[in-house]
Image 1 (spheres, rainbow, N blue to C red):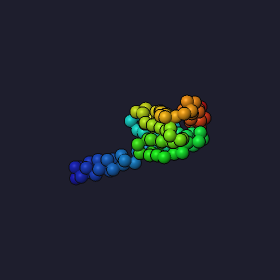
Image 2 (image 1 turned 45 degrees about the vertical axis):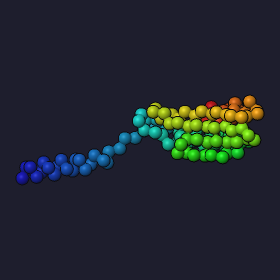
Image 3 (image 1 turned 180 degrees about the vertical axis):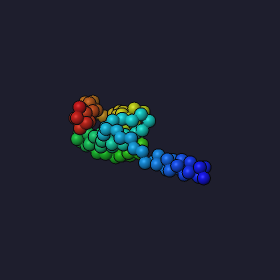
Length: 116
């Protein structure tokens, strides 16, 4: 009888474990877990920054973290990568641009949209 009581108690305790919750303040990066809210916000800001500067978006692939905008024959590419600490790395590259200051304006527009 004792074995059944102990087994039942152990089963109840094991069943209760998935119900335990660990709360983290919003916006706090959790090591090992990507923060989709930060990535989504950064992705939208990168895409919008390109539009702000008159680029026509030709590729907007959230899964690969890529946004490509065109202006004439030139292109600007934004590449976003989720870092291990939960932050997002954003890199802007350009090719064949006639306006050498465009990439800087896109970057500043991105920073402004991110509240920097």
